[in-house]
Image (spheres, helix red, strand yellow):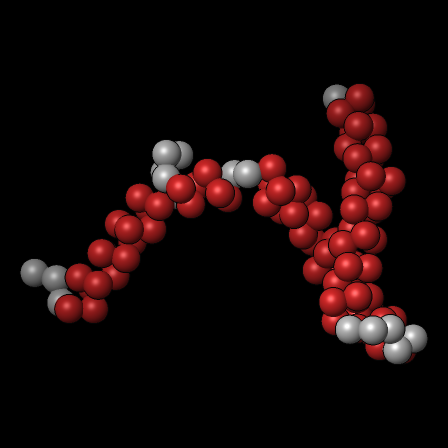
Length: 95
């Protein structure tokens, strides 16, 4: 017999696994093009967000956090286009 905490854990695990099935709304939302693109740039965005916010604060730009995040997004998108995609293509052509 399951104890009370185990029963709750099992219930949450079942709900979570149902939400991640292909036909669920959550799975479709997570698989959308905008979120997939954010997933592709997420690591670069993670690395760039704090320096970008610091730059925005240093230059006293309006709303430095929002401006810094926008700058980090721009940087991550450019890095994806200029560095990551060409290196992926080069890697694929060698195999």
